[in-house]
Image (cartoon, rainbow, N blue to C red; front, side, top):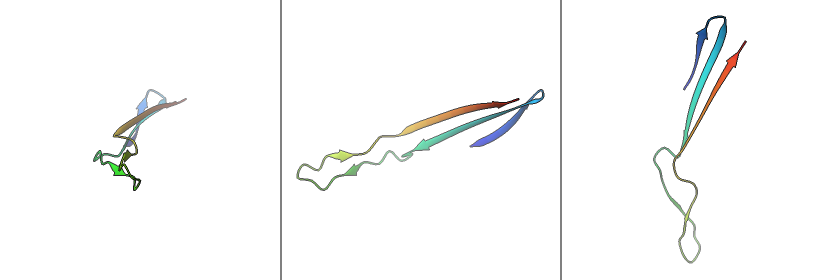
Length: 50
């Protein structure tokens, strides 16, 4: 989500991203079938323009 908000004469933007929202595991095709990849990740940012 990426929504601009007005704060006086300034613009505030907030953003949240989610990677691997279903929390899936990817398996490698090696002999041990080890789970590969990252779990669920939440990344957020805030920007203020003035």
